[in-house]
Length: 304
Length: 327
Image 1 (cartoon, chains in turn brown, red):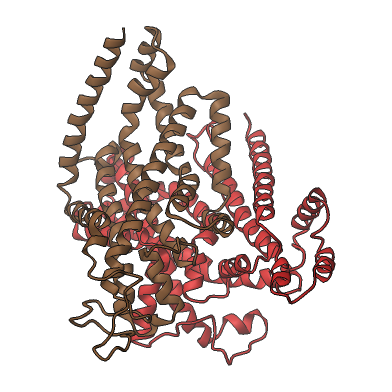
Image 2: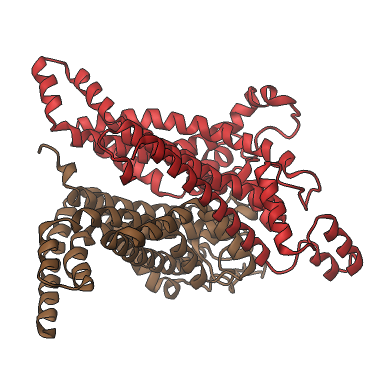
């Protein structure tokens, strides 16, 4: 019995792989999606290797002139290709090093949100009745507790760290995929193949994960991708308001510093790298996601 | 289930949700270590007895359940108690700020809902055109970029580098207008208003545009439009009819967005130093001013709950295919 279970699972998995490869080909026909994938690849690369590429230590090293004075607020030059900050730090190094925390929170926050939301939506939609009622009222509650104010409150009495910020983001964002997955599961649940699986004696667990889940996986991936963008935006907002991890340099924190120090008045070279970084990454996620949505949502194919 | 029963059920749920969320807010705030005044002891400014006296004055040394009951009472009467940081009624602080936020957001949201929806209908109708492609890429950029980043771009380019618009606040520091009319109908106010207004409009444009576009595409193949075409209506007249049919998701989405508005603008208000409710909240959190924090978060939560309720009810009322039980 157990071998057939694994065989079925393997079958489903192969099938899934084939389908996702085909979907990826469709998505990549879209030019803006191509651009998005390119930017995300660069971002991932920076997230992994960024700190090693940085010519100076982002916080510790202070750039000095030959005479020994600190180079404060200098526009881009050979010594500092993206200029320096008020405190004489190298903007390029901060930008490269700041990619990593941004990437970590975005990736883990997004994936965590996707997984939690997917499971809640699957369970609520599949079982229906009281389970559904309870889980959906819980999502209603998290909807009515606004993210930013509540996150700010939580972060005032615990020192913010990258892990904690990721956890807060997951705790507040899982509701979005949960609702969408639930409503998808509601329609899949009534389809004939699910009923026949139930009639032939399959257990709840098996039906949920082998029969229902593969059919809503596409939308689950879509919302996981969106959640990555929300997580990056959420983290940047928190850091900008001064509630980021104080020990690391993230793009949001760079914006915080340039804003709080008043450097924004002149130092466009200090503002633009982190701002463009955040904007480019979140936009790319949505460009790819939208092209993907066009493929998964059959209603959008219209009368072509 | 009749409509009335559905309505009553939704209202009760909304009420319970409000109660639970204000309780969560209360508990979260009381879990904060120390009180706003304990730092005064540490800094040596006041003795412990004096601090106890002040805390008694604000009711901070009463048992927690008494504080809780008083807190619920103050929310029900909407007067929110006394601010610890500014020692005047919270309502005096929060209502003018709320007004400043609304005056920024409501016109911005209405503007973007109208313009972007029309653009979206047009884009969906002309599927595959350059206009469709470029409008999607542009609005996707603005809707996915956090609103404060868009704000920072606008600020650096138009206020600091080009110097066209003021960068700070709601009016010139020298102005001292009295009353709402003098405050909001002034050229100086309009100048300060422009950049945050544009940032908000751009931020919300993407959702309405995509929603309207998808909605039209979904209806494009349907039979009633074929009939209109057969009747000999022009392209524009057909679009008008398809558009009317796509209104439902737009209207409900507008209600939902309205409810979530306050949360989205906290960072934006900080960037432009706009004296609204979001910026007040951040300041109050930094000063551990519980009553003000409670009031601001309560208003934000209440807005979401009320607008969600409204959206659900409208949906059930307008769309005949939605069974009331489903929502």
